[in-house]
Figure 1 (spheres, rainbow, N blue to C red):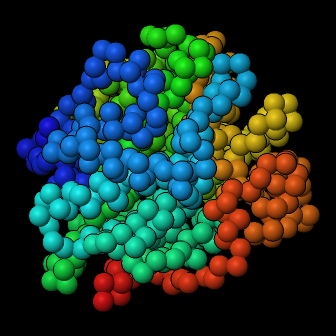
Figure 2: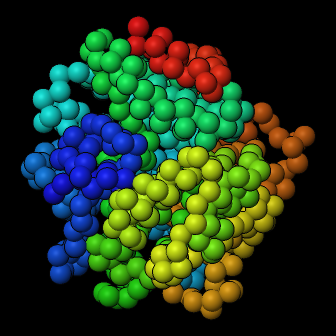
Length: 496
Ligand SMILES: *Cc1c(COP(=O)(O)O)cnc(C)c1O
């Protein structure tokens, strides 16, 4: 199977080359030339499998040149009991009638990014070998908080790789920041950027297209690559848990084979919900995909009106991992809806030059057949956290709460009560300040930083996840800050 650039179908590569490169040469994203269909009784078969087996079964359909044995080895390492605190890996929990939380935060950094970033290093290092690249991959990452730690943890001390993370200064939670700046490992670096996530992401994309920098890196034996969801190796492992959730609902006899489910995803860069859409294209019986945004509701407007306009105020919210106005992976959806790379290239050019583009009515209606979109602000999200904790004994984080808020609006507006899986994207303990506040602890009564973890645990009787509890006593190793136009100097230093 070939992988093509969303901006030029003539530009095509093997999957291993696509993963090594991350971004296509023309700035487009790699997509498979077609989305494979699941075999007829795949979901019945997968029902009896463990999570790693399900991952192998599904990913194999996209990965030419990999043996089952090799993928088994990757999956067992990525989704092991050492890394995840539950054997189900991605458990499905019923919260209220016909609303399920797909908990994607049981991994080593307590956010859903682990689901892909525990697998990506295996995919990437094997791709380097298969492509006979004897260079060290230098992975540049822009993060809104969770990808950074996920990548650092996934790639730490992995041979033939180095990883450099850029995060927006003041744009992440205190636990997120502590997790990153205390990262251990010989091959890692962390730098704060003066700016927001979009600045960091645009900066990293610019670095990838800097021919001069690529040359310098090459001379030193490096090859620049990406662990952001622009890399296909990030999106692919994320498709697995949607198929897995369907299988679990079958096992729990909550649904019967063939029944439709809806999926609701708190969205930032559009990577997670895109994976759910691919699961639908592969044949998982999924009805509507509900795209949930916080105050940065550029996607809500786009899915409602067909106009994407990033020229608007940027808000720092209580769900910082979704504070994004340029949702990179939307480009993959645009390609899927049109199969027209020239059209996508035009829109992306407009986005880069004017910050805005519009899609034709026919494309909009195609999109609406699959997607609905709602936004939920921090105040509403806080009340949802409180309500679910008090009424149903379920504790969720601020991002997940945005998902629940969007779903409530969708149901009220459409009356569609199809069983729905909400992607729960982070542990509530990553956002202790906001979660404590939501539960009624005023700011002045809150304990600072890591003490907040215990305070939340005492209040809710939910144990602090081990990876967060163990941050205590770790030293900050990194304190560099760069201007957004000077990220290149941080990379040069790092490669020295
Ligand atoms: C990254 C992240 C999101 C957004 O996911 P996308 O794939 O960027 O849409 C939502 N919630 C949390 C907790 C995240 O870390």
